[in-house]
Image: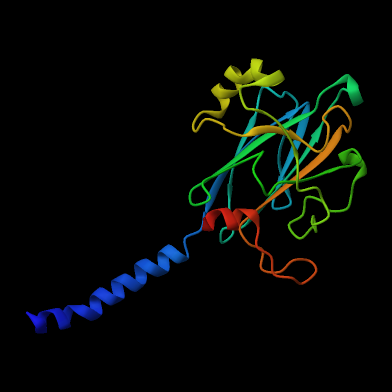
Length: 210
């Protein structure tokens, strides 16, 4: 009995080591990004433009791949009704195939900045290596999806979004009756070196570790 156990012990340890390594190294490989903006929005993933749309109650749904658990989401939203004449809004969630499995607007980690219209901007804000550390990290959090001034379009949006149900909040960068051109970024995973040469851990990585 003891001899048989000792014979099997190396194999047990090997299998355990493989399972442990796979668990530690588990990172999301694929994701789905679902976005709506009032009134129009343009989406970049890892610096590449992937979609744009003009109707807030017709959200876009885009699938993407992560590089070793890493991706940068960058979205521009324009409120077509200037200033106090309109109310801007941004709603998005990210669904991943591994932890963190769900990331929605209203959670920590999103950054935003009010700026010029996208056609007048050329600072690389959508690029992976753009330094957004000076952007706002506390967004104006408004109604949860399905409620508030956008609640009337929730049924039509759910027909497009499918499962899982969206639990994100509508957000903006500051009061949503002031600035009309807003830029948002979210980083999933960990970029080994920031533009300034510092190691960074993103909110997506922190959430995955919880």
